[in-house]
Image (cartoon, rainbow, N blue to C red; front, side, top):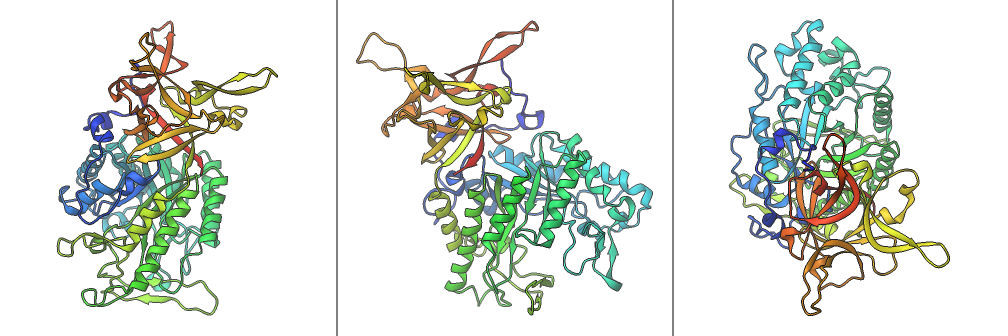
Length: 572
């Protein structure tokens, strides 16, 4: 009964986290990483992680991926046309690398941010695609998008549908600021997608992705649009235009490559920019963060100084803090997360850092440069993996954040199942907080109620106390004792209610067990074997299907959508 429909056959066939693995803390596989892991410190439903590596990951048993398993609750699985999936149009699209990566991530309790379905800047490197007749381009793009997204349908949390389409300094653009090719002048190479379909290739890619993977969030991913500037103006305009056309776009990925050593990011401008996207109803994702510590041509003998490491740590910490402050921001993902696997370590390309400040010129970073641009040293099997100051400062930002405020809803008819505190009239006819808990519909009226707002107070790894904001002192979600005629025998009951806080009570401790698709099972610390928070049925309809009711009780953990709870962060 109440079997979850939110998990597809792809996800349900994978190995699930056991209840004991979620409740009992696991030891990190990495030596020298003090304190709690980043994933244990992150608020529920906030993704923290990094890219897995190449499309065709040769081995899923490496120290770098062991680190990801230990530290992260999310990974980016990378797949795009030039690198493996479809090098020969006469052969089928090879989805095996992507499906293996996604399966590994889901088996390890991680959400998957998948990158990318349409990437014009990289597709120019695929000769057979560039040589296609224009009339065949749409069919090829649809085939690739539908095949790749469909191969992991239900296992992916977010898809970067289209990547880096907004023009930058010196790019050839259309009237809306969309890049129509790579380079300029004699070096200009037109984008095949734009030449064949105009800007419609973007909207059609979103439609194809939604049809192939209807439960995934779909976003645009872009670089150098993190602050309020002309590029982010054009990006916001594009997102609004797509939405107004009925395109299923959920949000925007801001890459956050901070590689210029001359100045730090404008943090206030980033906050303002994220907020204006949030105000328009778009979700926000930090997707590819790295921060250069130094530009050196001699990585073995000239590592960053302490001052440079402090600057890097400050940038990582401040960016993470901005993400935590913004309720619309759902992730902080890095590209990469260990120095020796980073694309910025001993580079084989020339990188131009555009300087938009009047009177300042661009900086050209030559090949062979190492930037030590991640929070973790090592990663190549030669240099030991160890935390840098940036990791410790990120850890501190997570640990010291204010309590987060959420609305909480179950996966069983979520529109009517927001966890709420009962009210009752007093002698003057005014409603005051009661002791009961029930499932309420969210509408324009109840949206203002503090009885539907909950604050999470972290106790330990994956363990929280849950406090309602409609307060009278007895504000904590508590498992109630069973009725008993023996006052000396106190046994756990099947109901929940609101009581005053007591740090010694396991009945007020709730463990968050990942349940897939961003949801959690809430398991009470007092007799967890039958302590999963559950929305109750109120009978059956004429077809024999169970109908969700307002009552909330505790049951043994089952594969029921009524036991899966989603946390919508609304502030700190």
